[in-house]
Length: 142
Length: 432
Ligand SMILES: [Zn+2]
Image 1 (cartoon, rainbow over the protein chains, first blue to last red):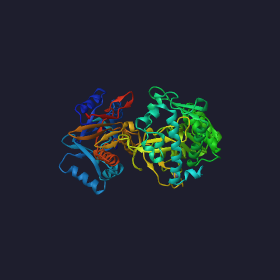
Image 2 (image 1 turned 180 degrees about the vertical axis):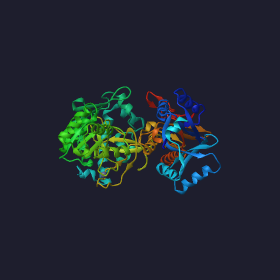
Image 3 (image 1 turned 135 degrees about the horizontal axis):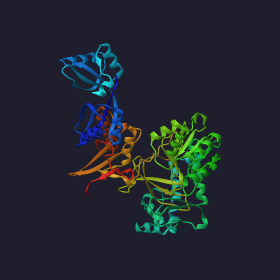
Image 4 (image 1 turned 90 degrees about the vertical axis):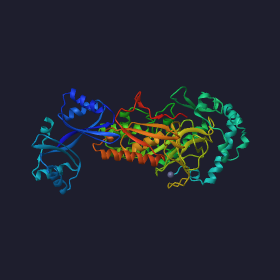
């Protein structure tokens, strides 16, 4: 259930994001999801990739500050209010979300990547409420 | 145990009397025997008779390391070679070594101050002391050696290096005290672990560490890994070698053997003496040495002095662990800033100091200080909130340590240029 997210520290300089995607591209690593959180000074790039360990070592060799972070991914119906329901359940059980990003798979469903404060508890709560979690192998394949 | 209670616990007046007497003698001796220093005194219109008390010390000209080089090798000795019984030298990073000579009496004084230091550290005659400082031209090994013998402890003169042998003797001989550089003690700890030697199976109880700067974090690490009390000893060969000052078991500053070496703290910029308690450059005047007495020798080490009586009972003035070198000092908005202070702040926040670069600019009439810190593994978080918090924490700590505001910027690894493996720490873009 736990998915390894590739996290990269970036200064807000032009071309760095490009460099990351190129490095991964030439090594045949596919990026299935990506988001950039930024402040005026620096950014944090978060990605779900096909081979997280390999991607990590490629970036480290290129002297990027990178690490793998444990996240989970919730598959939710692509309809109004679905995300709100999931979040309500989690906050009702005192699971707090550090950050999330979501993307639609098709008309029917959306994937929501979550970084909870307590990952084990988060998984238990979601499973208890019969919410569908995406497995790591599925995620890396997309 | 206090080795020389009469001196080490003397009250301030008694100490000043001793210092006054000895200073007057020393100034005479140097004036008449060292032409280069006599000239310095003449330039400011001083004769030995002008020096009547320890309070007159600040009238005297300074001695610099370059004076020793300019008078290489023996030009600053005040006795004929027939009186010199030992010569030590420290290798300079550039050019000629710094040479010092000891008379019989100097060696006795040196043994005395090292013995006092050992007692401060809690060493006694039943101890087995493994001296793993280098023996030779360097003062570390022999300095500790004679102090231990004078105390009556058993010395193992193993010298530096040969880690396997160090560990073997430590185990087989039941060494109780190790004397070496702090970094070597950590290396020994690692090797112990690799060799499967547990600290519980050793009899080590005290470490006497000096000859290089080390932090409080290193002290904690050494004490935990070796199961010992780690004591800081200070010295420099120009003054005598190890034993100029040493911590007592309170670990609250190093007691200076001030009946031999009179300390002063000066502002490295104005060269004026600073009041007790202020940080500045440490200056020593040797008042008992015969071979090569030095007046107001600028050590370039930064520290402060504490004249309060110590909980151990000693009244000998204490100096704090050195905070850096005055050579690196920057003056920003009138405030003295040392890169080592910044390094200390960063070290306190992680296991290893990150690479950093200080950039000083002048915008209008205002100096600004920017600190670039490489975000490496130990600092990196996947959450913006935490990185922002880290940035704020560094900013706050620097503000309270330095007394001026610093603009902290987190940058990617390897952003900061390295020259031959070493990073350049300061860029001063001010056109003054
Ligand atoms: Zn004390």
